[in-house]
Length: 153
Image (cartoon, rainbow, N blue to C red; front, side, top):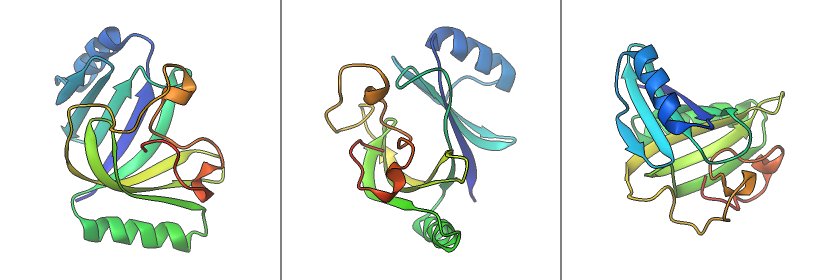
């Protein structure tokens, strides 16, 4: 099964956790000092928020797969769509170790395709800049999909 993924940047994590917990009628599946994630079943969505990155709003969209075969299928579709692809392979981000790749749609929206392999105790295992947009580890910046990854995701 594939699960839709949305990641938002928020200014006030606690206030946003309260809001989305009410909206989804569920508490987050994972909460950290800078991050929260809901793994909803109805509809199936991996919804994450964090205080990392640039201005508040949508950081990226994605599809999470249950296995490597589904991920390979998404990769083949992305390549067939003739979009620049950033293949990160096994990487760490958002308190998880994952196999992932990124594409950017014609409007510049980053799409992450990933298979989570396990949890880790930190946001990522790469060294991070102190603050600001450069401290974000998730969506690649506009046009970066064709280049090697400089951040964790």
